[in-house]
Length: 65
Image (cartoon, rainbow, N blue to C red; front, side, top):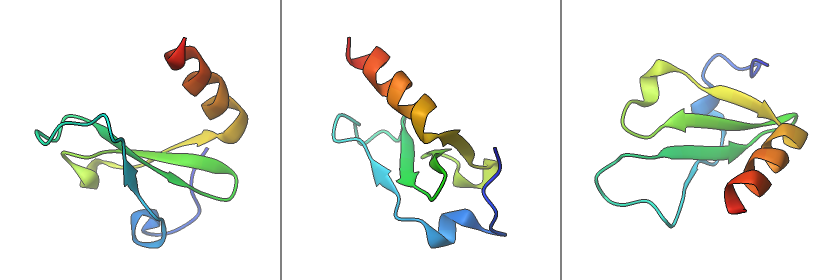
């Protein structure tokens, strides 16, 4: 899935996990209309992955268990 913006990171409200350390080794997420956007917090220029909401929910539940 592709986010339909020329620069989606400029239009989304990015969030870093409260479990992240200050060394930058984590990802950031942002809610989008049809997906959850995910990017590398160390290098935000390499692109954005868009994960559909239902797949994101499954992933989050699997990581919690």
